[in-house]
Image (cartoon, rainbow, N blue to C red; front, side, top):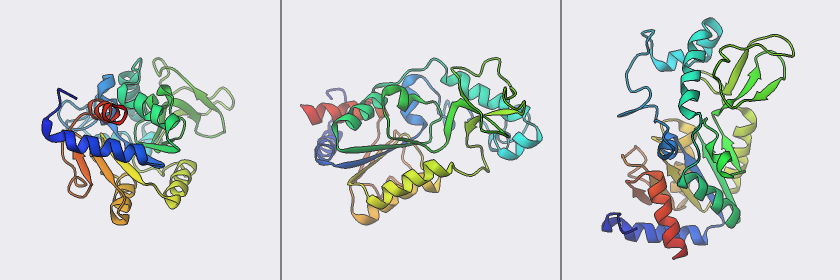
Length: 258
């Protein structure tokens, strides 16, 4: 922790103590968690889609929408392939590995992730709610056929080997419903409750990402936001660490075991 601002050390020690005592912990993660694996965030400085419009002159939200998949599937496939190419060959970083380690050591840990890169599971986390899916899972748009792939290279708009219908990555596009089974798992866990909630590397713009933090704040449960920039939740959480995910979680672990 010697390279961290001295002003952050008391908060890091307090968070480490909270983690050591916790029995049920929720980690909510966004693209910032995978930034240390070399993956770009999707918005903001240096983000994959920091410009307003795509090459087709439309917002990325329209290009990656369920409606566009039905009307002009080559456009969402183009950008899903681009996203997967940026994920390809990336490995888990210290943040992913520490969350997996804490899942093994603490009574109950759940990861709620917006990320579609699969890196939490690659690091060893098992209790993961992939609320937006995984770009490396393909599903048939008509039948129940599914396939896990290492890469989308050369697989633009493939057809199902079972029924010959179009395939798609098993991810939630703009305008589509969240996966019911994953949402149910989250709601059951929230009903039981958590005694420590982290929001890491996400701007928390989606209500279902912000709500668990808001619910915890209202219940008096300790909350931690880890993000180099401030978000609309920053003023409400118990602790806000303006750090990258790997640096922050590594410092918390050092304080926890040291």
